[in-house]
Length: 320
Image (cartoon, rainbow, N blue to C red; front, side, top):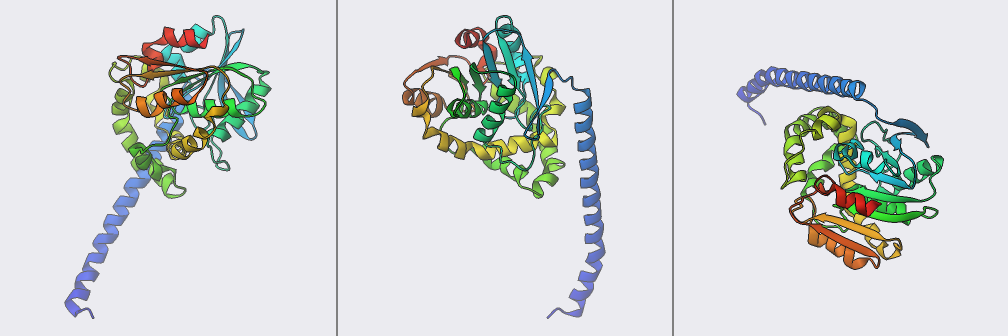
C-alpha cells in the first residue's frame, strides 16, 4: 500500500506529466500539419509529365511517348517514373519506340487505394489492364530494382505478350533485409499513419541524401537527379506508405516468384553493378541467370545499383 508521502508525490507529478503530454501532442500535431502542407505544395508544384487513367478505381499516372515497338518502364522502390527521365532513357528510346512509363501505385502522382494488397502480382494485374486500355499487345518490359518483381509478375501473367525482359539491379530471391525491418512500422495501419506524418517523415528527410548516395555508389549522384525527381515528392506520406508496403512485400514476393522462374520463356537480359551495395550480385543476379534458360547476364564493373545511369547505352542496346 502506498504511503501518504508517495501519494502526495504522485499527485504533484501528475500536472507535470499532463504538461509534458500536452507539449508532445502539440508538437506532433504541428509536425503533421507541416508535413501535410509540404506534401500538398509538392504535388501542386510538381509538373505532371504525363496523363492519367482510372483502372478499377486506381488513378494511374503514366507517360506515353514516341511511336514504334512498345517498351514499358517500371521504376524501383522510393522512386518514380521521373527516374527514367533523369537517366535519359525515355528521350533516347522514344526516338524509335513507343515508350510507356508508369508511376507505380502510391508513387509519383499515382494513387494507392487501401482496399488492395499491392503485391507485385497485384500491381502487374493493374498494369496489364492499363496496357490493354492503351492498345498494347506486345512489349519489351524493363524493370529496375523493386520494379523487376512487377516486370517478372507481368511477364508470367496469362494473356501478356512480352518480347523481351530487361531486368536492372533486381531482387529475385529472399534473403535477410535490415531495410525491411526499418520500413515495416510505417506500413502498419493506424500507427503507420501517425509515423508517416511525424517521425518517419522527419527521418526520411534526414536520410534521403545518404540513401541516394548508397544507390549510386561508387559513382557520384548526378547533379540533376533530385531536382528532376523532387525531394519533397519522394518523402510525402503517401509515398512513404508505398515504400514501406513494398519493402514488406519484397521477401515473400521474391520467394513466391522464384518458384516460377522456369516458366519464363522469353529472352531475358540481366544487368547488375559489380559494386552494388543495395542487392547482392551473387545472391540475386548470378543466381537468377543460373535459373533461366534464355538469359544473358551483364555484370558492369565500377557500377552500383543505378546501372541505367552509368551504362545508359548498354541498357538501350539491350532494350532495342
